[in-house]
Image 1: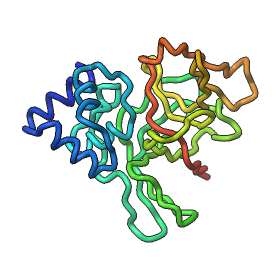
Image 2 (image 1 turned 135 degrees about the vertical axis):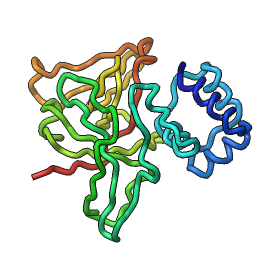
Image 3 (image 1 turned 180 degrees about the horizontal axis):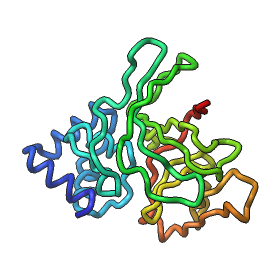
Image 4 (image 1 turned 90 degrees about the horizontal axis):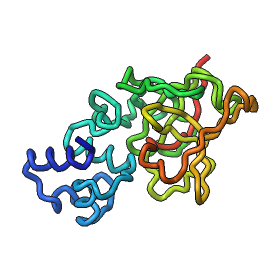
Length: 219
């Protein structure tokens, strides 16, 4: 069963019409029309961004990411501030900054971090632990990367993203052109950390969970 089929199944279980779901999505900050939702449910639209999926998880209390290889439920109310100068975010396992592996199965814990400025952490942000050295010196092995899944209006070219490709999770710098999508490493060792080149026709095997907005190094 694909994501769209599962959305329709659970929507029917709740007894919600498409119009009701669209209204609930708008309350979550996601604005789509009935035609788009219908195409997603029917499998006609394959590219579904993380913002939409996170909103659907919140509405139906079901982790639609599990169909993409992530298990267990999301933390309800992903972003919470315990005190004015701190924020608590869920940590989703580890994402490889090396040669890639699937280890983002569940929320391993929550992490309370200090705010360094007055800018709000975007809604539904989360943390992944960096594993490997391919993004050195930008990201170090063991760093906590804060990821923003709200990228519908963002140009992801040259941004560091958490992505899934062929059932492996990576943190890589995204490079886009007319023919290819390239997952690039910042590490200058090009022999050990070569680029991953994805032809546009293979993009159905690719999914972006969001882009890194901040790095926290653990000492």
